[in-house]
Length: 298
Image (cartoon, rainbow, N blue to C red; front, side, top):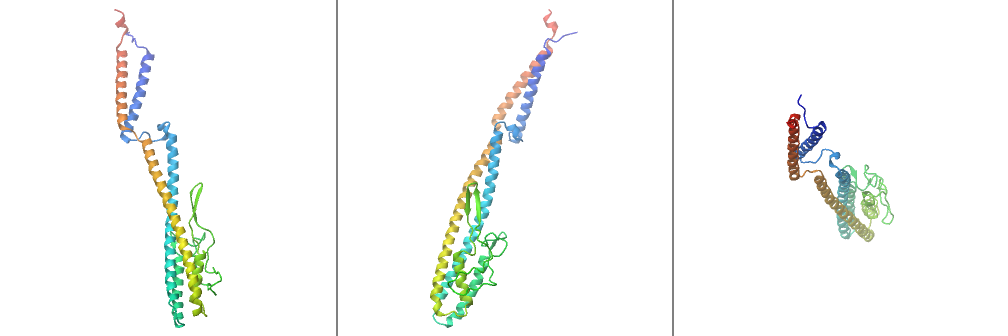
């Protein structure tokens, strides 16, 4: 019987190396086809931990942006409502200034009554099912005129308010919280409500009240403008935060893509090397299989 010279050990080693190279070539071809290095973290080697950290950080930033955008929408609506209140006070101040005789008081009361209702509607503004000026009672209209009537111009009266003192806030990070809410019992709003209610309901309204009314309206409007400034500052802070996070998100997404993406040019070179190795391995196996003991006997 003709014996082979190549030992089983030599053939086995070459074959195992060839099979490993074939597996690498198959993986390489899959990477070229899909454009990604691996379908799971295990195939990314040392980059897997970095990728996981980036993905967790990205998800956290995306959630923070979503929360901040919701808060920004509320702040912008609050600012708009306060602008409407300020417009009412501007008009009401003009009406008070225009009162010069007793006959003007009846008309003034009707105008004040209409503006009081308008202001109530503004303060009961909802956004996405939440009342903006109700504190934490976001499901209940914060202003109810049913039992409210200002008896004089000097006594603070918030009987119209059904909410609480909670100021809405948003957590932007583990160590940063931004207060942005305005409640319907804020001093400036209470003053505006008091002035309008007194003008609309007082049985004893007289020309002598006009100066005090004008002063109260000025004070209320100054306070409303201050609240608008606070809302504007909150909006700026939120916009800056959102912009910063969106920049980070874009960078993180790019890094994630780079970590998981296959470099096609490099893969082509690697594939060529694997093919050369395979050709050499199978050529060596073929040579071993062709060798016979008879070649060494003569």
